[in-house]
Amino acid sequence: MELRFTKMHGLGNDFMVLDALSQPLPAEGLPLAADTIRRLADRHFGIGFDQLLVVQPPPREGVDFGYGVFNADGGEVYQCGNGARCFARFVREQGYIDSDEIRVATAAGEMTLTLTEDGQVTVAMGEPLWSPSEIPFNAEAEADTYTLEAVGETLEISAVGLGNPHCVVLVDNLERAPVNTLGPVLEKHPDFPEQANAGFMQVLEPDHIRLRVHERGVGETLACGSGACAAMVCGRRRGVLSDRVRVSLPGGDLLVTYNGSGQVRMTGPATRVYDGFIQLDNEKSGGRTRS
Image (cartoon, rainbow, N blue to C red):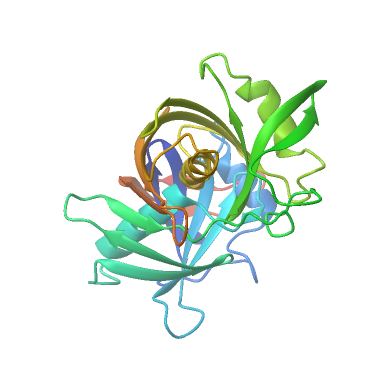
């Protein structure tokens, strides 16, 4: 079976985009089987990507599209901000919608994506969830910060739900932050029953932070849109950030705005890399590709 796909990225956070509007997908209930997603995500033997994005028909009235997100390990996730920007650019360039404002249904609820005049995309990421039961996070009561035992240390962390569970750690020096060692531990910490994205944030100014993110099911990525929003809202809640913050990630900068209530909004670029085709008839190899 041959499928068309598009390779895209948002600040280096890269995606395989599957269009389920113009072609049938092979797996019932899922765009591809989990083991196939893992093979395609492999950067040596497959296409290589952090997440698989699926453009789906609208599941109900009042939205323009459905939006599915799957990590490189084959697991479905509820949110991907960088992917949402790529989603918006894809459906606009394919001619599926003329409006600058696009409403999509995700597993976490509805999102509004807005294409800006300067070619960027603003994503309304939803309202932060602070209640431990909603994140979800194991704690007796809601707090600005929590203590967590990990790798033999007692850490001070912030926890928030923003499509996905997020754990945010404030660090003095981002280069020396233990992202590759502590990130996987925080991702699978038992106090996060659905696992978590682990963000390491250095505050430069009230309106500027640096950030590295270890994403659950992926590892460290060059950018994480929901992670950037999570770090900003946690920093604002702790009183160290303003309402409008530039978030500098390894792949580039995002603008995140949040005034303490309502929607978090994130603005950044989305880039199309190439279009290709993949044959799924060779399961052992994960398929053959051509661009």
